[in-house]
Amino acid sequence: GVTQSPTHLIKTRGQQVTLRCSSQSGHNTVSWYQQALGQGPQFIFQYYREEENGRGNFPPRFSGLQFPNDSSELNVNALELDDSALYLCASGNLRGGQGAPANEKLFFGSGTQLSVL
Amino acid sequence: EDKVVQSPLSLVVHEGDTVTLNCSYEVTNFRSLLWYKQEKKAPTFLFMLTSSGIEKKSGRLSSILDKKELFSILNITATQTGDSAVYLCGMDSNYQLIWGAGTKLIIKP
Image 1 (cartoon, one colour):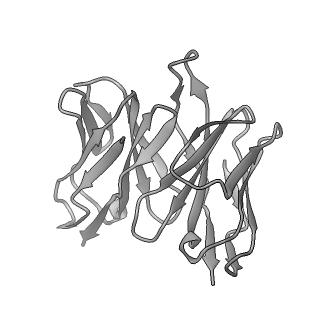
Image 2 (cartoon, chains in turn cyan, blue):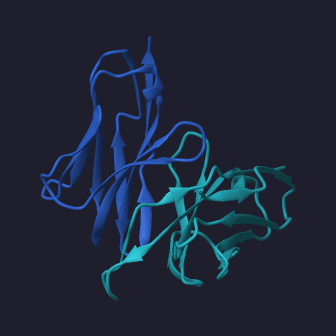
C-alpha cells in the first residue's frame, strides 16, 4: 500500500517542512493534495518518472521530489497559517501515449496532518 | 477553468434508504471521472468512468457518466451505517486531478 510519514506534525509560521510518501511498488506516478477541513482535496502536483508533469494553483514554495525507489517528498517553505491541512499523496500509473496520458486507479495514503501555529 | 461541483454537500438518511449523489464538471481535456469514499483519511476507490452511458456496479453501489450533459451520479441502494462517509468525485483532466468538495453522507440506524 501507500504509506505517509509523519502522521502528525506541528510547525510554526515561517518554518520549512518535508512530508514523505512511499508509493505502491510498480507505480510510476505520485500526486500530492492539500485537504482543508470539510473540503475536497486540492491538487498540488503530480510526478511521473521523477519529473513534475502537472501542477495545480499552488505557489513555488510548494515543491516535490520523486525518487526511483518508490519514495517521494513534498517540501513546503515559509509556512503560513493557511497551510494547516491534511496532506495526502496518491500513487498510480499513467497510461496512454504522449499528448493523451491518463491516470489509472489512484491509491491514497492516510495523510499527514500538518498544523502551523 | 476546470472544476468539479458535487451536490448535495451533506445528506442524512435512514438505513435502508436509497441515495443519489451528484457530480457535475467543466473540463478542457477529459480523461476520466473518479468516485472515492473517504471514511477517515485515506480515500478508497469506488469507480472510474470513461465512457458515457455505461453503468458500473459494485454490490449496492452504481455509477453512470453523461459526457454530453457533463455529470455523473453515484447511487447507493439499501444503505447501511457503514456507508457513512464523505464521497469524493474527481476529474483526471489535462495533467491535473481535480476534486469536488465532497458529499458528506450520514446514515442513521
